[in-house]
Length: 139
Image (cartoon, rainbow, N blue to C red; front, side, top):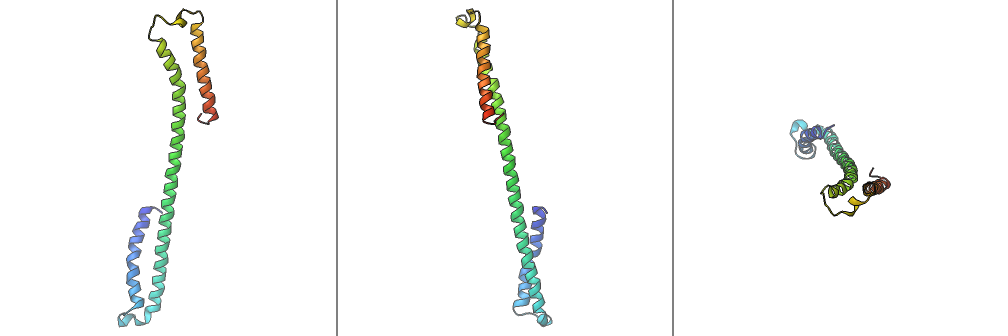
């Protein structure tokens, strides 16, 4: 049952409580004089119905809150994964960005194994980040 249906039922049943409470508990028309016990029974049923509606509404509200919390947790997991992948891409991008500036006085440019050293450094850093993210269960 939806919250809307529960509220419609609540708005229909609640006003009847006051009317039936007057019919069994006070001055009543002469035509209703012998029916007070029946009106008391109707009042008890309406009271239980109202309490059931309230408890169902609370249960439904709690279920919706739990569902929203689960969705938020799932979104958080996705965000962590995206951040980990972004970090894995950002490190080589930064290093290659420095080498793409066309400096003349970079010692690694004149070195025979400079290219391989830079590739190895990028692979080591990404490997370490991948290991740490796996250990933290982000990947």
